[in-house]
Each structure stands twice: as C-alpha cells, then as structure tokens.
Amino acid sequence: MEVTEEALNNERLLAAARFKAFMMKNSTKTNLNLYEHLVRLLTKVMDERPENAVDVIEDMSRELKASILQEKQDTLRDSACSSAALLLAEQQKALFTRAAGDEGDREEDLVESPLPNVAELAFFFEQAGVGLGREEMHRVFLALKQLVDSQCLLRCRFWGKIFGTHSNYLVAEGEFREGEGEEEEGTEQTHEDEEREEEPWEDKDETELVEAADPPPKSTYKPPPPVPKEENHTGVNKYTYFVCQEPGMPWVRLPMVTPAQITVARQIRRFFTGRLDAPVVSYPAFPGNEANFLRAQIARISAGTHVSPLGFYQFGEDEGEDDGLRDSYEENPNFEGINVNEMAESLNLWVHHVQHILTQGRCVWVNVTKKSADDVDEDAEDEEREEESDEPEPEVGPPLLTPLSEDSKINDTPPWSTMVSSNLIPQFSIAVLRSNLWPGSYAYASVRKFGNIYIGWGMKYIGEAYTPTTFPPPQNEYPSGPEITEALDPSVEEEQALKAALEEQTAALEETEDLEEDEEEDD
Image (cartoon, rainbow, N blue to C red):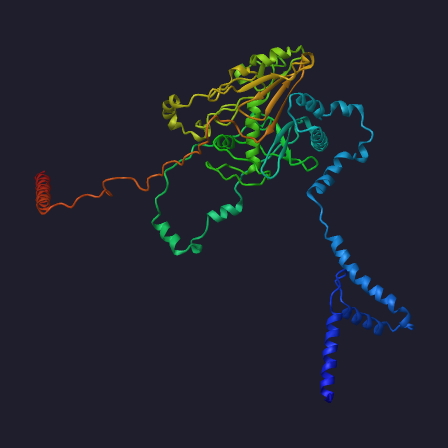
C-alpha cells in the first residue's frame, strides 16, 4: 500500500505538535518550561550576537534562568510584614535609650524630679498579690520618666490601668506647676454660625415661608440651668491625667471633666474600647466621647477609693475654714506610723484624702438658680424676697479625711475588705485594703508609707442586675381645652331653644340701648 505525500505531512505535523506539547510542560522545581526558555534564549542570542555562541550558550541559559527566578525571590522577600509585637518593640526601644544631653544628670535634678518610685510601689503591691508584673511595671516606670521629661509637672504618680475591649489605658496622675498646663476651652459662637441663623427671605423655600406665616407650636419644655464646671486645680479637676495604650506610646492629656459628664456616667454602664475618640452610645446621652467618659470614671474612682492612714495628712493651721469646706491638706511631719495589724482590723484608721463628689457632679455645691445682679430688675425685688424661701438647700458631703468606717454599704456588702500580706513573717508584712464597690482598687500601708492603685474595667459594683434608665413620658402634642374638645351634636329642640334664647337676649339689649338714647336726648 502506497503512502501518499499528504499523509506523511500530516504525520510530521502531528509529531511536531506532540513534541511542542512536551516542551511546554512546566518543571516541578522552577515552574518554567523548555519551549519558553529556548525562545527567550534564542532571542537573546539574536539580540547580542556573541562571537562564540556555541561556547557561551550554557552560560547564557544559566543567566537567563537565574534572572527569572531572582525576581520571584525578591517579591517573596519584600512581602514579609512586621508583626504587632515587633512594631511595639520598636516603639519601646526608645524607653531604654538615653538622650545625648542626659548623660550627666546633676544631683539637684535627681532630688527635685517629680518622677515617682514605681519600683517601690510594685514591690509593696506584689506582696499583696496585686500588680502588672515586674517587666510591665518597669516599662511603665520608664514611660513615666518620658512624661515627666516632656511636661512641667510638680507631682506625678502611676494611677493604674483600665482595661478595654480592643486596647487598655495606662493612667498617670499629675499636677502642673503654678502657671503651667492651663487648659482653655471655649464655646463661643462663630461669625459663620450667626450668618447661618440670619438667612435672607430670598433663600427660603415655600414651605419655610408658610411656616413663618403660620408657625407651628413650640415646645414649652425648659431645660434645667447647666451646672458650671469646677476650675482647674480645684475639686474634680484638681489633678491632670494622662493616658497611653502601651509604654512607649505617646501620652495623651485628658480634658477637664464637667458635672454633666459625671452625672450621666453614674447612670450608664459601658466597657471602654481603648480608643479615645470612640463615641459613647448610651441613654441618657453622654455629653462627650470616650476620652470624656474615661475622665469622669477616673474622677469617681479617685473620690471613692483613694485613702491613706489616719494622721498621715493634716489640715493647715493657717486655714480658718470649717472642716466641711476645706479642700486642701498637708503632710504631717510628726506622723509616726500605725501598727499594721491594727490597720488590718479597723477601718477607723483609714481616711479619704480626696474630696467627695456631690449629686450635683461637683465637690463644692453651687446654686444654679440664683441670678446675677445685672439680670435682676429693681421692680422684681419683691418677687425675689418671695422666692428666697424656695431656694434649694445647699448640699454638703462628707469632709476630707473622713474615716472609712462611715462609708455606706450596698445590699449588705461591706465597702472594704482588709487583710495582712503575710501571717508567717508579721514583722515585715503590710496592711492591704481592697474596695468592694470599685473592684480593682487597692491600697497598702506599711509603717510610714502607703499607696493606691487601680487595675480593673472601670465599672462600679451595684449589687443587683443593671436596669437601664427608662425614657420619660412623651409631652402632650397640644393643650386640651373646650375649643378643641369634641362634643355631641345638639337635637332640633335644643337648637330651637338656643335660638329663642339668643333672640330674647338680642331684643333685651336693643331695648336697653333705646332707653339709654332716650335718656341722653332728655338731658
């Protein structure tokens, strides 16, 4: 049987296709195929035209293959990302390095430095089983040094740590030197706001024009007068607080707290998120963001749990004010200390050294209903005398340095629990105080030293299931009166009787008018 030339050509094409398919199989090691490699290699030979192509073809093949693989290796090497722990370590690296000008610290700077001894605080609280661990406390110590070096502080101490759902807050309490760190907050109305309020009639649409001609009813609700906040260095704003998420991160100064924020913070329960700019979604509506809410909780915790041994502080001799109105004290140089076992047994030997926060949200009560002399007219003096009897009574809280034994219970739960750090070595033990109303707040006292710390979620123990504040009843949409009250339609007999009565009344009025006219003519 003869084989035609056409059949031979088909067999050659089929063999070539099979060979090309074989050459296009990718390698399991380099993910390359021979066909594409030969195409690139021949293209390179034609472009470069080396003199001894047969001698250098192997080297050119090796270089070509290496250049292709090198790109993929670079891509893999550059795509490696840093972990969160590595980024935090790079930020905290600055804590363990000294600046160029800090090599020769003078003895005067070391003595006058407001940097607290966090290592000593951690040592005593470690005996009570409280703290953040030696490693973290040492990093906090270095972070406080950064804060003291960057701020003009007179005093500084480690307040504690508040947990959050995403990140935590490390809190530092500081007091600025006189004339430093004044916070200015203004809520003045800008010129743009005034222009928005006074819009011309040409810019208003038909709906606004109709409402202006026939205005809708306005609400008669009058909000209570706002309670002014306490000034800086007084009351709940006596100290300034700084927070950061981790040691080594920048410290952020918290704003001053207002009475409205403290009042609402007492009515809501909410976990912190760890973001200062996070909104506080609650009812009643909180006036501020998480930074303001954090500041309000810090003020409440400080007022309720910061305590000291009896006699460690005393009132100044120069002050002639009543004990209930005093807001400052000084350290007693003659304090000799109290026995640790006695402090662990009696709450009378512990006192509050932070002012109590009143229901008004301030430490010092203020009468918000009293008007200034400029706003009062001379004609209203008599009305003022009548209203003097209706003025609210001033609210007075427990004075400074009040013993803890006078604190009230919550559902038969004692506000404090006391213990001794060690019964095996009593001569070196310390007295430990734990707050049951603010879980996470602790205090210790040795013979002549004491300290306070808070490590918790920033939520108070209420002794029962939390019930959110209910909404107030809605205001009436319109006043009820006879002109809008629906009544039954009168019958035919009633209409005729009413018509007859009106006619008699009209006739009587006409007779009266005629008589009056006749009398005037006679006169």
